[in-house]
Length: 227
Ligand code: HEM
Image (cartoon, rainbow, N blue to C red; front, side, top):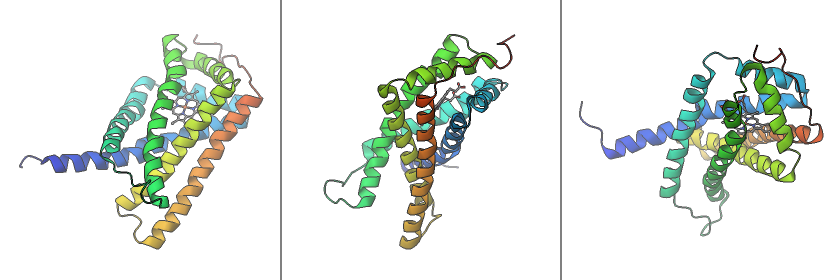
């Protein structure tokens, strides 16, 4: 087997970049926004979902391999795509050109949001050793505090809307570039379907922010702490 050319390696990495946006990252986003939306049902279902996650065996390894490594790869490749991208938005303002530019801008916004988000939730949780059933009371207090201020609410709304747009529009691009949706009419219809999908995810995220903001409720560990 001969050596791969630079072009072949670049093609493979770009395809992997596109695929990781769908799985595992996109799948994680759907699950994450859905589980957080449990807060709108009540604080107990939300607490139990955090308990379940934080009692998983090998949690840190699952997170590193399923979330952080794919996210890091997707971000690095995203910045590479950003540098080679040629935006025509100021020359021709076709909706597709705007979507193309917005896709790249929201990617950057989500990256910054994630550094803030993980830095204020998972990082202090690990740093202060809130494991197992101690994680939920700590994380719920962090979220309650965040959503007492308009700065916190605005950061989250921008993060959520950027992530849902980036994912929904990315899915549309994925279906086209992988040859799943072919033809102008089908591509237009798929565009509407993914727009609706993005809207549903956004509503779930916004409802969560509203619920936290209106009803900040602290909780005790479900089963008496880590004992
Ligand atoms: C209302 C909106 C959101 C809330 C309330 C929320 C809440 C949380 C909480 C509590 C954690 C810590 C989980 C734990 O350690 O058990 C977390 C982690 C995380 N969140 Fe969010 N999140 C929201 C939106 C988002 C968005 C929009 C994204 C993606 C852009 C995102 C990506 C992540 C990631 C990657 C982690 C780390 C996952 C892990 O290590 O398990 N979150 N979030």
